[in-house]
Length: 618
Image (cartoon, rainbow, N blue to C red; front, side):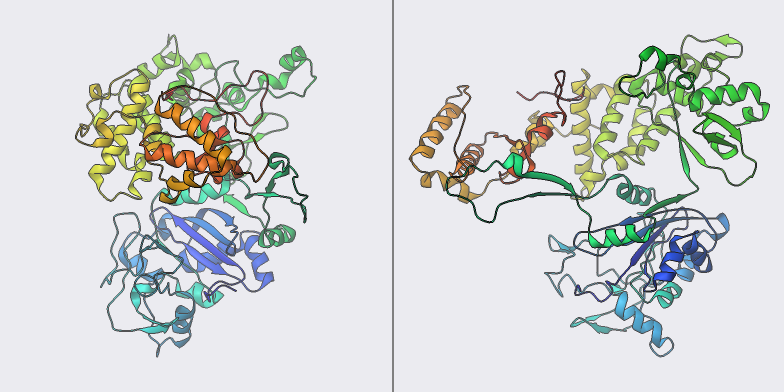
């Protein structure tokens, strides 16, 4: 068992979203109750007793290699149950040690399960310590009353009342208490964290677990005794496998759901006319596939047909359709729902502004009701437009920056910051933005999430984002100075030297001082190769060298010596390998597939998959 007492059989983590959100880590020692919790929304009914009416939720099980699994759950509460002020937070969430005389059992449970650490100055080698600080920001500050924080999380009440308890050899007070709900803690007798939040970050945090795929494991099978002189083929020995731990195994054996969402979300197709995707089996006759009736029927085309024959359907947007109509996949048609309140949430698939007409089609589908065909969408007040963009303009949908703002807001819910910066650069170059500065100020925070983790200076973060966007805009043939964005600091070394992102990353690769002197211990053959290759580097002469030798003869040793020497001279040395294992043993190494975007499955027509904004570094 780990050294923390609260690690037990089934930690269950829950988070709520909207103006009233809560996060819960809980645990059940009773397998019958655990099964009930996962079946028929049992646990949601339990939560209603403590938090109120739950209108929507999503849960996902996180399995860890070094720790026990736990459940994340995001709850969206009804308007009557939302936590809208500090008094509401205090009713369901506590971050203090309870009165020992008045609540002896609860006090014992909080001491046993809900105290973090000790860490920081009390224990510097605690696993939560990173660069000398606790990554969970403990100990927190004392606070006489609950306050609404700036980062969507409240600052809970932690009064300096002098109460202390001794835990793991240290005296801890209210600053070390993890927020909890007294009722759930008493019910489950386990570590159960409860947080109130109202940020989209909670959604992004949970859904990364849903879409990251199964855990992977790489290993090799080696004989117990190897013959002297035997050549080891690392490529053939490499195995790419899926990792399934004992906790995940028993979860699957018991049939517990590892992900669920309510209400369900239906992804709505989006395509231009006669450009819908078609699936077929290998060997099928393509003429038969094209003439097949189902090939021309999609969610979108059937949406148009339903509007044509059903006047009731014309009252709803495409994204509202699943709430009132049910998509029958086998028959490929929409059917009106008989029972109200059983609908789905519709989400039109994402379209990038650089896609042109498909993007403007999405704008129209989000604002126009009752369309009966693609041509109908192009008609505005009886006048036919030449394309979807013109139709958007005549309807007033893109006269302002609202559609571009919506695009960035939508993308921020699931795209990483660098992808958002690329999207912003694309909008600058290819879209007609009237209020660029306001668009920049509104979305700067989401575009700089990765930089803000390690850089507290907001001005420095802004410059980092500007440099990235400058490089992206430059790769598209434009100058960032023509868009009215904040000025770049030309005194900044990283910015003024004009180097691209790739060059900056390679120049930042560190090398061990011990590796610099490795060339002094090379054998005769290794030293000959080292001197020859280094001579070409220093004299700027191009040459290809092939280093060959049996396993264990020191090829990697030679590579490390060369890499350290070249990098110590202030030059760039790119280390690539065909496998992840080989790349991991070289300083700054990456696989060739990652470095040069080589497809995993190669065909006669395969090419390196560089995206259009990428630049080749000379």
